[in-house]
Image (cartoon, rainbow, N blue to C red; front, side):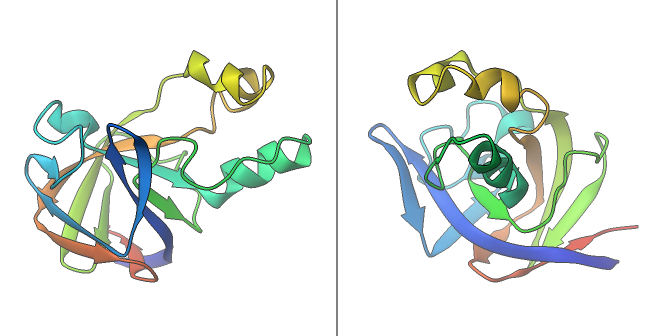
Length: 143
């Protein structure tokens, strides 16, 4: 088990958009109270890196945190992780399931954003072990 980073911010998807959360409760169906809960277990948690926001900002696009649809915003770039890799955060274990697809709706923010973030938008995970995650929790990559 190797420490790779920390949770920077947490978001819960609601019908009105992303809501900043202090704690997220997760179980095998996803994030409790999230609008995607119990819909697609393989895509139940979206993890984004602060690097995605830095990339946008470096190209003159200032995007507020949560705008990429992430549930977990972290200070580690997980995009190189392959499906099956596991992360441990507090008492929660997440398994990387797939890379996030390009979202054309980002053109509403800036027409260049979808192409800019096509490989750097986020990564999906499914919940292996239930529990709760809070801001500043450590993130470990399981060996």
